[in-house]
Amino acid sequence: MAKESSTKASPHAHSDRFIEAATERALDVDHLAHLYRQMFLIRRVEEESARAYATGKVGGFLHLYIGQEAVGVGAIAALRPDDNVVTTYRDHGIALAKGMPAKALLAELWGKKTGCSQGLGGSMHLFDKAHNMLGGYGIVGGHIPLACGVAFAAKYQQQDRVTLCFFGEGAVSIGGFHEGLSLAALWKLPIVFICENNEYAMGTPLSRTLSIEDVSQKAEAYGMHRDRLIVDDVLDVEAHVAVAVERARKEQLPTLMELRTYRFRGHSMSDPAKYRTQLELDDHKQRDPMTRARAQLLAAGYAEDRLLDLERSAEEEVAAAVAFADDSPEPDLSLLAPTTYAGPFAY
Ligand SMILES: Cc1ncc(C[n+]2csc(CCOP(=O)(O)OP(=O)(O)O)c2C)c(N)n1
Image (cartoon, rainbow, N blue to C red):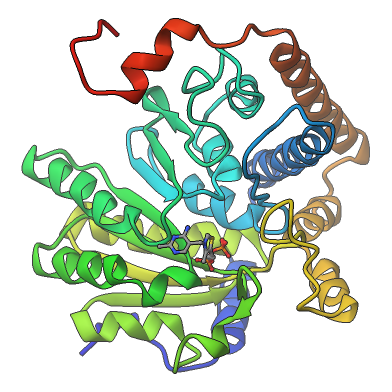
């Protein structure tokens, strides 16, 4: 049986209940402004990445996080800097929220030497040891057992560090998901599994791949805590994830969370997203959590001038990162052999 945080209510009902609770809390406008700036920065970085891809500065695959910013920003706000994060190829927003500088990120997408992985990893493999951002993985669900290993290491070394593991709903039918959850529950690992349910795995809706609608129910099979919400409000995300993070840190117990979100762009740059209607997309854009955070700030008396300053400073940060990536050198050719083959290479 799942634990007391379980719910069989619809995600809307759950979210509404939480919004009521949220309104009872005093709104920390400076904190919300900080989260809004992070979301705004991510969106602008993604827009510049798309532009660079179209002009051939970025090669390979590019999966944008536009529309989902409140998930990564809200969830990571509930962490300490020394906590670990592991995620999928849709990793730009998560890396920025975890503290990776925009310069290191864009230089990596541009394939430059100054990128976070010296330009060798690219968009899907963002790593930043200093900020405990442990990747960026391309195999759907393949990183979930790896994240369990990270959480196991923290527990084994008696550190009170929590691991957040993000994945899409497409990973829920993959073997690694079940192996990971099973071991996390058995070994009582300090980990929070966050399923970013953005409704489509490439072009396939969840209803065509899963026999149930509530992904979080999968936790029941492993006797794991679970939670579920619709991502309208970044502060709600933070508050929900904070409960699971606390449980992981204090009780060494894992949680599976399903966060219902939506991506505004196609799966990757090559996807025109013809499997959904314009009406559906417009409806989701109307409920954009980033716009909502901006409106919340204004309603709470945050001066519009301050908001514009904050947006301008983010724009400047992105422009500086683009210039940095443009001006950075290509990776050293001497890295090619030692990073491709095992052998007696000096690296
Ligand atoms: C094991 C495996 N199978 C197939 C793919 C090809 N693939 C890449 S992304 C993707 C869809 C995954 O969707 P989801 O998990 O919902 O994440 P989202 O892209 O929506 O963030 C697929 C099938 C892959 N990378 N790995």
